[in-house]
Structure formats: structure tokens, C-alpha cells
Amino acid sequence: MHRILLTAGLVVLALAAGATPAMARPVEVLEGEVKAGTHSASGRAAVVVERGRRTLTLRRFRIDPGPKVKVWLVPSSARGDGQVPRDFVDLGTLKGSRGNQSYRIPGGTDLRRYSSVVFWCVPFTQTLGRADLRRS
Image (cartoon, rainbow, N blue to C red; front, side):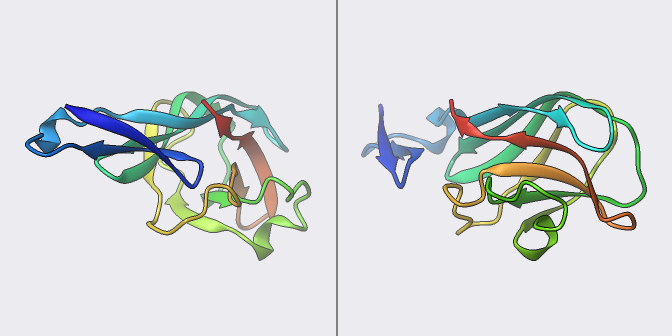
């Protein structure tokens, strides 16, 4: 048996006494639609919590390719390219321009603050696409 607790705006599974970790189920806590920036982009982004770990998942993801594209969490207030590179959490290099993907979110990342995902082209300093995340 498990309980669902709301902590700092995020749903976290708390295992009751005697429960096993195998009983924990993934819980989607944030979600948003991937939208075009300077490139065509589409799909769905979500933050999933499983066994205390948070992961950004991309589903039915498509984006026009670019060189050295990074996946960053940024404050939702960062609307223009000039604001993005100053305040972000780097989730790594984009794994591909098509298909389902996942990226581990570092522990301690405040998802109330970093609630948007951008696909950032490093050489051209542009946002290729983005997804603004909200509670599921």
C-alpha cells in the first residue's frame, strides 16, 4: 500500500511500512506541448516521478535538426533568446530530432522556478523549440 503526498507542489510517492519499491508507479506531475521556436517542433513534454527520481520525457517528439542542441530547463519568464543562457538547468545534449526520449532532472532542481523546457542551439544561440510545463 502507498500514499500520495503533495510536497512543494510536486507529487511524491511515499511507501507505507512493508511496501516494496517495486510497487511504486510513475506519476506524471507536469506536462506541456512542444512548440516551434526558430525551428519547426512538436510533441509532448512531461516530468515523471518514479521512486523519488524526476525525469523529463518527450513523446511523439519532432524538431528540425540543428548543430549541438541542448535540453535546458529555464524559468517560464525567460521568453526571449537573450534571457535563456543566463539562467538554466542543463539536462544534456538532445538525443535525436525524432522519437521518444528521456532526461534525468538533477536532484534539488526547483521545478516551480524552472518550469519550461527549451531546445537550445549552442552555436547559433537560439531557442529551436520549447514546452511550458504545468501541473498534470
